[in-house]
Image (cartoon, rainbow, N blue to C red; front, side, top):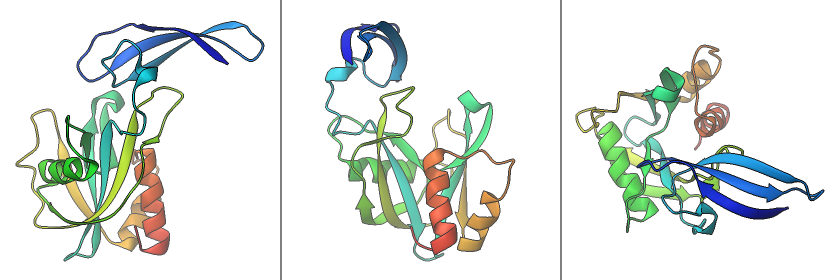
Length: 191
């Protein structure tokens, strides 16, 4: 496989489309379109060790429950269950982004980082977007007071049994990462 050319198709603030011309294993010319958070002309030159965004997996220490959010997602035309998340600002660490986004989306305060993943990719057939999973403990009372106007978020705290119950619903939309974490929590009681 050989990349021949990368062409930026759109010039938007948070997401752009790119067209890649490449040769496959049989030396046939092919094209592929994908989405990227990159503003550069060639996103393939970016540092893939730094994630574009952080997904926070919070466990509320007083309530002894996993914190999830039910959030309206325009591309789904409805609500999806997931975890608080957000793009990293320039100069921020994964932990700083996690603390900021957790507070903005839930009103909860990060008290301790348990573990974090390296930059990982969830849908590399469509995008080069990378995220870091940040597993944390938190405290406080949930509120939507700090949500942006474009955010419609409900904070939900789940026990192990409640997590199992919502996983059994075929009417709930889940983010893939969230379904995997919820499934682990429901079966093992840990995040």
